[in-house]
Structures are given as C-alpha cells and as structure tokens.
Length: 188
Ligand code: GRF
Image 1 (cartoon, helix red, strand yellow):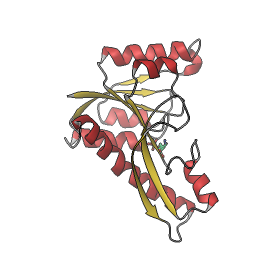
Image 2 (tube, helix red, strand yellow):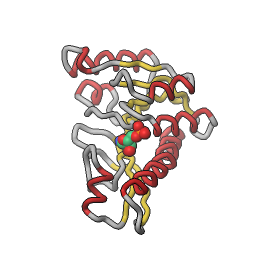
Image 3 (tube, rainbow, N blue to C red):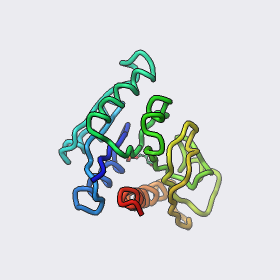
Image 4 (tube, rainbow, N blue to C red):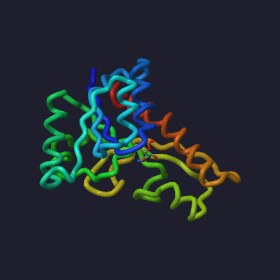
C-alpha cells in the first residue's frame, strides 16, 4: 500500500476530496501526512476532521528554501511517503524536494495546460474569453506548471459567470484528482 502526503496552503477542498476517496477505499493508499506552509490555512481544520497528521512549517521560519525543504523531506522519509500530491500549495518546489522525490510529485492546475499557467489560471482563461475550460493533473518539475501532463478534463462554457465557472472547475478537480491518484497508486 502506497503512502501519500498532500501539500496545501489554503482552503483544502482538494485535500478533502482526496481524503474522502482514501477513507472510502476508492483510492487504495494511506494518507500519512498533510504539509502546510501557512499556520492559519483552513485545510488544517479539514485534516483534523479526517484525523490526518499535519506538519506545519513556514518558509519564513527557516534560513532558506533548502533548509525548509530538508525539514519537510525528513518528515516525509520518516513516514515512508511514496507520492506527494500538491493541492493548492502556493510555493514552487525547490531542488531539495524535487531530487528527493523525483517523478513522485504531482499537482492539479485549474486550467488546460499549457495554457494559463500560474496562480490565476481560471481568471486568466475567463478574461481571455476561452470557450472550453478545464483542469490538468501533471508531474511537477522545476518549471512553472510545466511537468508532463497525466490527465485533463474539460467542459464547454455557456453563459456562466466567473464565479459559476470557478465552481464548475472545482467540482471537476474533486472528481479528476482522486481518479488520477487511484490510477497511479494502482499502477494502471
Ligand atoms: C485549486 O483550484 C487547484 O487547482 C489550485 O489551487 C486550488 C486549491 O483549492 N492549484 P483548494 O485549496 O483545494 O480548495
């Protein structure tokens, strides 16, 4: 059985979708750790509800990114983590983490990559006026949302507002991310 860690910085709705899918047995894996870089992130409350251990560490409490990631890697190795799922983790992965978990870090992005990379994918796509919206799960490399794509899901826009599109995107994420993780841990 694979051990999964989730990294998050904020709300944690994707964390909850994955935690639920693991608790129900849909994903045959253990969720062994939530890593959070913001002390007041709502995702911490969600982890409590699911009884998931949380490791909270701010980059600003460390000497630099290397020390920050070394501390995290230590926690991950202690728990024999095999797969890291980024879910609204608002920091880029540095060399320390990428080398320790090469090809074992995935991310969900709220746009159809390679379009609309970065922190405002939904808004940027909406402003651009695209007619097809979607989400992408991809491996994480040293670029910005640039790693190999694992899977995507999409829908056509009708006359929805930005807020309605955001809600649809999040619903799609909560369906796609657990489905991709299930496939990865089952090795299919
Ligand atoms: C999601 O839209 C995800 O695609 C992006 O950050 C957001 C996190 O949302 N990377 P939540 O914290 O999981 O609710």
